[in-house]
Image 1 (cartoon, rainbow, N blue to C red):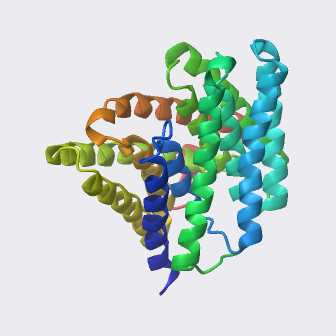
Image 2: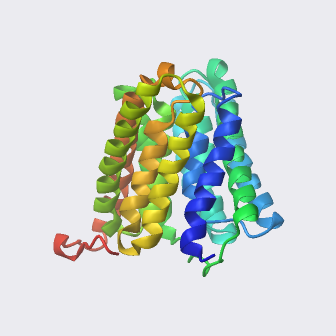
Length: 325
């Protein structure tokens, strides 16, 4: 089987495994596991050592966030700069040494822990720890899917440049402040979205427009899916089949249309966030709209930070931006 056909099958199996963990166990904000599973499909783990490093990166991000909150539990003017430094430096170090997947996991583990308990640490730390479980679940689900389906390993990704430290730190801190003002109930979603965006497009400003186009495409697909699935009541099995099939479809389209892969994979990520209404689809659907707005806010913060970092070095002519890059 060629890799172009393995990737969507790997996505389907991985999302199914992650959903079967976070859904029945009622893990808070289960979309995080589904989103990270979708993101990691492009970076399949090749052996047990790779899986162990990814788990270490995810756990390291969560523990780093916990330590920052413990050092300055109610002094946000101290904890926020510490978060800025940890996010930028941590993702850079892990990206250079262990690869982009580990950098993503560290960043998302740190973002989900710190953002969740940023305002009320004593109350919300258990939820931050639950997010750490979601991140580790995504690692294990994608590892099992890679082992079952197989993959064709590609060339290693180039290390991140030193200039990526600043936009990643600015994006996540800016998203956290913006969410505290505009969406105080969706801090984790907003900061996680900004982190994923900045890690993806740092140094690649031409990807900003495809990110937004993909986000809009994913929103449309998610709401069409939710509108259709609600007609069948609270049918968990049918809903789960549609969710896994939607993520796999976007991955298949990305593999078959490489020039538009950034748009399609962003659409798949947005679909995963908005369409995840576990554990009870009919009850949880009301949270999709708030998550949609939060993801767009995080996407805007991440894109803005990367754009201004790039424009401070060299102006970008709009005519040179091509969706097929």
